[in-house]
Image (cartoon, rainbow, N blue to C red; front, side, top):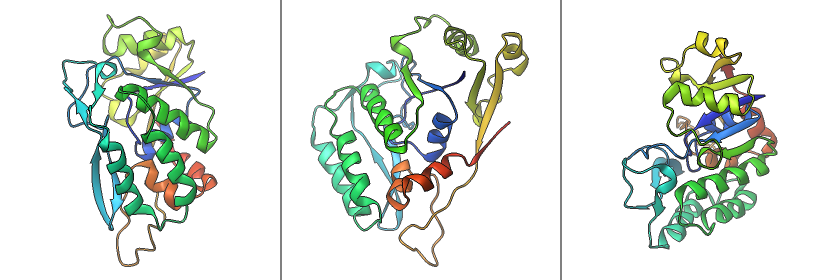
Length: 235
């Protein structure tokens, strides 16, 4: 069984989805410290031909809190505002008609927890793309918060009986292959390849990469996005 562990990101870029599609079980690492100005509640869209950063507003977010302890802002207007921004940016995209209902379902999900909103969103994206990856919130299962860094990752792998662990390429300095091998676990790192596709036939303009997966979904059918999810290498 192949496993990956990653902090929950809202409507993440396609590299995140590649990691999710590459494994059997994907653990949402939601009982670790919240990162201010990270990607947990932010991502990028294509608005008026330009990269646009959107943020889901939070209530009293702090790096002294765990991700699953952080709540959404009390004012619900952010949902309609974000949907309006997405509508304005993508209403002429070829797959807007099928992707926008999914987007509305995700953004309007009734919760005050950023962790729960992200969990729900990733389940919905998985279903839309026909992925079978099992999603697990770390806060609900493993009871190993006393462990740190690599030891906690190894413990989750053991509890899940994982034979392979895949981590983003940025973690090569954090994890030690011999240590995983000693635990009978193969350690790989995923390196995303750059994927490109037409964005409103922007002739003369460079492709804007690494936007939210919503961008890829708005311009491509499911089969094409599934192909993009395989554009990576394991090292």
